[in-house]
Length: 223
Image 1 (cartoon, rainbow, N blue to C red):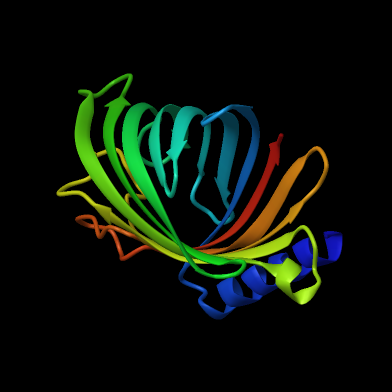
Image 2 (tube, one colour; image 1 turned 135 degrees about the horizontal axis):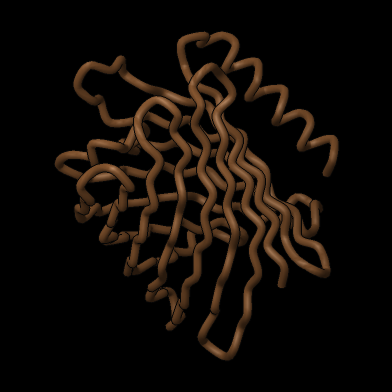
């Protein structure tokens, strides 16, 4: 798995170098799942950091509860984040959200998942008026279990997310617009490690150039 992480990191770095005007991020998540019958409770810590002259980073915690019924899953949760931004303003975000996911099995080992989220994003500032808005997201992805080609405990995922919002908060430098992902995961006895590449596009803001980013995404979730 270390070799896979190294290869993906080099690919992300190479792509980011080719597109010199784009931003380069790392996003690291460590979480824990608790399962009880049809319920899954999740908690995680998140750190996202940019590698260029812009002084920007974000830390956060996330908690959620999912209820599965056949191919459907009901989702609910709460996210709290603190963003460090040297050029604009630091902020706290409090975000309750609800959603629903549908899994469709295509062939053995391959399924398609569609997920819709509605989020109420609240931004709190120290020296500026607080802001809030409602954002809807639509996520579609394909998941393939590689045990079908004799790679037990390995899987790959590819997907796309659309973010629907009218106007971002004034202090929000990176307001998501669209996101493509390609992820590789390996399941261990104690949890699952996922590593991959994300291509992010952000909403165009007044007086700022269009922003795009290449992100190395690393996540480990304990069982």
